[in-house]
Image 1 (spheres, rainbow, N blue to C red):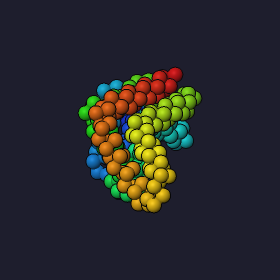
Image 2: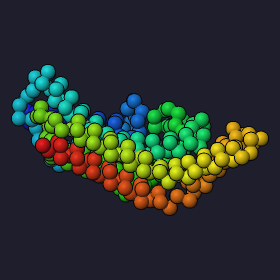
Image 3: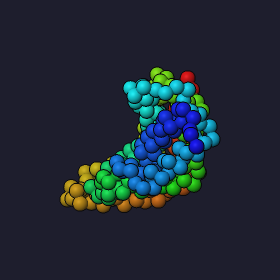
Image 4: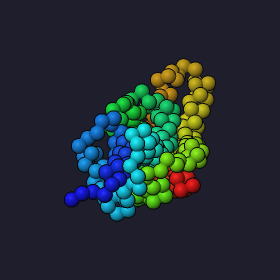
Length: 256
């Protein structure tokens, strides 16, 4: 069976965009190499999406033109993965700010996704975020956004919206503010604890603040995380809305 001209080139472009999304999205892991299951998923998703709405290219591109087309698909896939990465940075910033005030940033664990050391508190909040994201079918949202991107920005064109950079900048600033708001309740309690330790050291000079201060901040920080645990659900739901809004913004920018 002979394939129509342009079929293989179009499918390779589908593979390029899907690969960039899978590699750049923290939901699928951030290892630099390609695991076997990743390769299988990329080929399966690309084959499914191409079978549903893909069309062969209307011409056979030259090697230089085809390289530019592949680069365009990689950039689009990276931008789609950047939306989830930006929200994850907000969660990580909030967790590291809390851990810094508690003195827990000296205790780190190796993140199996990145292979780097991550503060314990930040790792806890990241786990909660991913559990919430999967519970709200976030993995389906990522795949749906990939399918929508092929409709709004079909393969085989060298066009790339100039508003993508502004969309990324706006998304990052919004998610950074959301990360600060996410950690605000615990940060306020830890700030009050630091004031109390300072007042205690002022009235009791014999007290060793370095020994007592860390223990008090860690205890109050853990207590604050326990007390504010019921508020994690609406906070994480708000971050999920940021993911949806960021993906919609990227898709709108791709659609021109």
